[in-house]
Length: 141
Image (tube, rainbow, N blue to C red; front, side):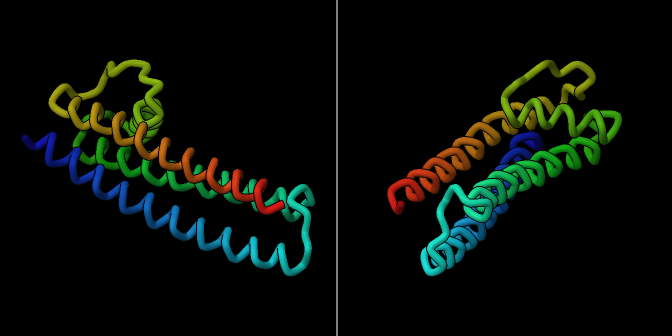
């Protein structure tokens, strides 16, 4: 049961982090779109392309925070021996690459399984957000 509580807590926390991050990225994009329209800036200009790059980096940062959060919990729970191992394991688990769980403490494996599902959902959320933004940019021009 402890694994389920830890996993559920991490899911709720990462969803709140992700939702907040998506909100602020959306707000940034709305402000930027208004300014681009006022200044008649083309989306393929350096400024227009930099908006897309900042969006991608913002999404990467969100996922990075969430991955590092899981990694920190793994180190705290002594599920993995080092922070480096924990970040690597968390990255492949979150991204559902899933290499193997060698060296991972057996009593915390359910948390890792939950991370895989959580990462899958959050990556999907980011993809949907990104596609929606890019589609709107194309429609607006």
